[in-house]
Image (cartoon, rainbow, N blue to C red; front, side, top):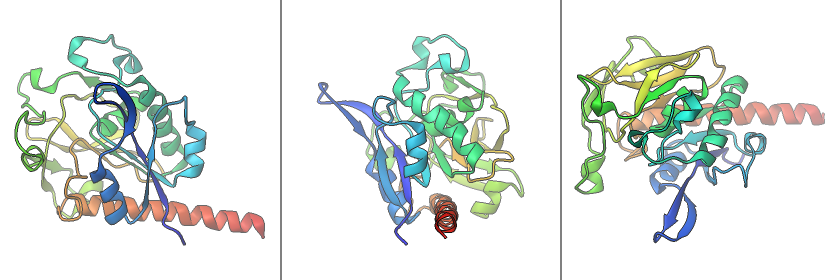
Length: 259
């Protein structure tokens, strides 16, 4: 059969400070295509162009990518402040109901950075606007200078729940990750389980308890060097297996209806 389709959530940008675009990092497409072995499809995350119902039919799974804009705090009942940074309300309008629908249906999604935060907010959780301002927390933001290799370099340990979902997928109770985020989980959404923490207590790995499908999400960026990194590779491989399983079940159901 043809490779199943993974919808990669795009972000809105102004090219050359003038031309509006929807874009996605090539490392996301590379990880989906070459590690998950799925067909990457970039989604313009804007309800003017796509509907959640359409996406659920066209795609077999979803990669909820990182991005500079943050989830608008009104989505979790708080006023916007300067500390919350930039927003993308159009993306909020697509991804938040998409997460809820996928969690209910068992359709696989893999959340990364902003995507990790979207999962928590979609299920009723809240976020801190700036982790580094909290007592005892370290600065998790991307280094302002240096090459991409330096910015995406491994920077801290994530300790996983012994015997938990991530431990089983990764085969280790501690893993090294990069860190390029400013916000983080404040209160948990319904059925959201923290399965890994940074040394300062910041939640770094979550899943949705009792959801029938793949719902793993991470606060770091596993798309960087995903084919070679010993943490990223098994995550994208597990996601790919879940997407294939969903696509095969859908195809079997379609053939049964035609019989």
